[in-house]
Every structure is written in structure tokens, then in C-alpha cells.
Amino acid sequence: MSDVMQSGTFSSIEVPNRFALAPMTRTSAEADGTPNALMADHYEGYAKGGFGLVITEGTYTDDKASQGYANQPGIINDTHVAGWKTIIDRVHAGGSKIFVQLMHAGAQFQANRYTHQPLGPSEVTPKGAPLGLYGDQQTWQTPSAMTETDIRAAVDGFARAAANAKAAGFDGIEIHGANGYLLNQFLSTHFNKREDGYGGSLDNRLRLVLEVVRAVRKAVGNRYPVGIRLSQATVTDPDYQLPEGESGFRTVVEAVRDAGADFVHTTDGEVNRKHFVEGDQSLASVAASVEGVELIINGGIDETNYQDMANQFPGALLAVGKKALANPDFVQRLKDGKEIGDLDFAMLQPKATITNELAWREKNAA
Image (cartoon, rainbow, N blue to C red; front, side, top):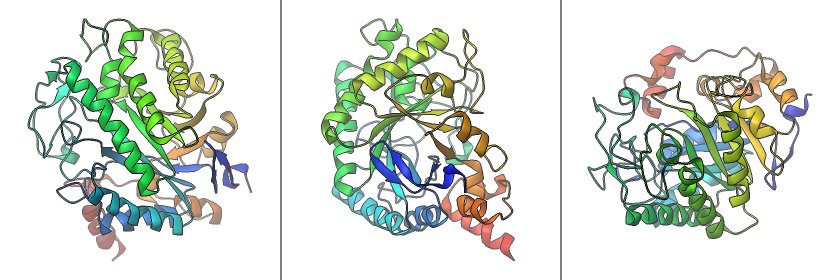
């Protein structure tokens, strides 16, 4: 059996294999953000399907402007924590470890039960249109530029959410710094037009990201896994590139490591996509070349290339998204040599909810 299927250590925890479930928005929590039995069944299925690590969907971090979607789960109060505890227990019983992904939507905001006003680095909307899979909003709202008070509240929210995650029993934390959400927005010269200490140079645009990593690390202590997901592309702008190119991304990875991140999770359309205005490496290959930080890679990993990816990035975890959604038992199917199906996007219609997925599965099982 390939080493991909062997147990090992990642970010100080034992994982049964090198496959991770990529974080995927499902908008299936209760209206108040409480994780529920439907979600417990959902995540348990991936554990029983063989994934060594399960990473949750983006989970909001405060009762202000962090929530981005209706029925998005939160982790900001005791009720939320209790809901997650049930899920964690079932994932552990299924044989997997589980990390929570902590997310602040920023300007990429489609629904929020606490406020109607999105916040972002500047008064700049995302490119493209809101995601129909996650709501009915037709156009992006213009965010308010965050004040110093707003920034402090966001950092404090990440820290409190991290403490709640540890108390709930999660095995680790992934900070969402990718895909066009708040931390990615501060890094982006599309979103970030600030002229204070949080805008302009890469060091300034990195400032909030590093404050969040440090605050999360302080909240959970030194011996608890903490990492961050990073991308250049956003969910509505796949072509955005850091103006600082490959060397700039290396600076980002080194900086989050020095701030307290144990791992970086790179995500792109394809793991090996060369996507810098300067340089000929991929996000994953740049991150892999930085000493002292572990790696999760994501982007087009499937049954045809997983071994090549594992060989190219020794020790990295392989995060699977679309193929996992189509085959919750993806890892077990690989072990058993069974056929692996492609994702039918009808499963996600009219909204990408667990209920609609289950209805599709029932219909197609007949």
C-alpha cells in the first residue's frame, strides 16, 4: 500500500492517512448558526469514508460582520460549541481527525443575521456576481471600510472562536486566508486601497493576517495545531495575482510561519498551476520550499494523480474537494479499487445544501 494510506504525524497530531477533506460551504446549519444532526451525518460520512483529516466548511467568528451566508455555522457561543461537540465526537468515532476552518467574510458577504452592512479593507466590492449556490443575492453590496475598532473586533473574534474550537474538542484550527474572504482581501490590491498601516506595501497588507495568526496562537497555546489557507484566486476572480509575484508569496508563507502557523494550505484550480506575475512555480511548490512549515495542497486532486501529488510533495496532506463531494467514501474506494464517480453539479441545485445533496442521491439511487 502506498505511503499515502499510511498513518503519520501532521502538525503534531497522528492522522490515519494523508487524505484530507477540503473545506466546502454547505449552508446547512440552523438559522442561528448552530451545527445540527444533518451536519453530523454529513461529516461522519467522510470519516467513515476513510479521510484521515476532515476540515470543516468556513465557520463564522463573531456576532458582527463575519458571517457570509445564510445557514452558515458559527462558533461564537455555547450553543454553537455544543453542536460542534456532537460532530467532533462522531468524526472521531469514525476514525478521523477534524480541524475547524475559521472565516470572516469581509466584503464577500451574502447574508448575515447580525448586520446588513458588510465590512472590508476599503469600499470595494468583489468582482463578478454573488454565488447563486449559496443565496439569492443578485449583486454585491458595497462594504464599509473597516475602522481600527472594526479591525480589533475582527481579530478578537478569531481569538475567541479559536478558544471555543479548542474547548469543543477540535484537533486543530485552519484560518481562512483564501478565496476572497476578509484576510485574503487585505492581501489583495483589488480590495485593499488603504493608506494607513494596513494598506500599500505587502508588509502592510500582511499586517491583519499576522495579527490574526498571533491572536489565534495565543488563544490556543503553543502545542495546538494552527494553520492558514492561502490563495491568490478568489471565488469570483480566478485570475487575480499578487503584484509581488512568487517572491511575495514566499514572504507571505514565511511571515505566517513566524507568526505561529504550523501549516499552510494552498488552494488553486490545479495544484501545479503556475500563477504568478513573476516566477515559474506554483503556490504549492513555493510553500513546500519554505522550511519550518507543513503543507496541505488542494486543486484538482483525484484518483488519477493523487500518487504523483504525494510523491511531488512528500509529507503534505492531499485535500480533496469535488471528488470527495461526489464520493464521500473516496479514500475507501481507492483502497478497494472501486470505481470513483465524477461530481454531478445537479447535486448542488438549486442551492448547495446537504438536504439537496441527499435528495439527489435518493433520486439517483432508484
